[in-house]
Length: 269
Image (cartoon, rainbow, N blue to C red; front, side, top):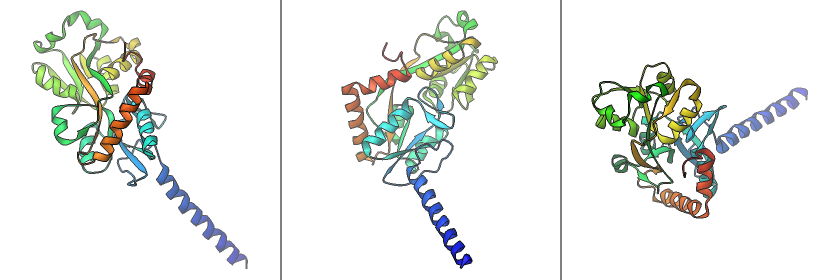
């Protein structure tokens, strides 16, 4: 009788454990270190490269930032839980096209070339590219146009970004250095391994504030103006329409501006 009783208890524990595992899989909302997503109609798989604060980044093993907040709100409006799926920047669009994710929400700039591959929502933020340098070098570059004519500076960029494309096209006489993240670029700038770092303005502002004590500053002028939006597969018209409706509603009632201002207080100045 004792053996039978113990067997029944063990069987019950196993069943509960299985239910717990599947329950967690169905409701998981923050998996920053995985590139395998749950496929379910109840889950919105959001592709990110979580290395670009304040737009999207990982802190204390949780995905945070402006895009993370908007993703959670979009998921709520769709009646879905959100699963963040982290990829290298250059792998985000291929992951979307391979149906590994449903949407990219990771500070993605709208470009003509990207429009060939994906469908963009209406832009939710107007931004652009900025440069960050060491403060002591400010007099060395009185005008950004000088970048074009100097063998120096050595310019750091993140591979596959619009900053990378800009440097290849507009600053051909300079040395281009590929870096895996904005944080690594800031470190390289402090250690004088590069002379300039170019990235999206919100990222540059954030890093310059973080690294102020290390003498890093943003160059005031923009190098370009760009729209930031979300990307879905071109055939996924239902999700595109739903995301656009969400953006329109949040723009009209002021919630979008308020959310942006929480992370980028200078965005509308």
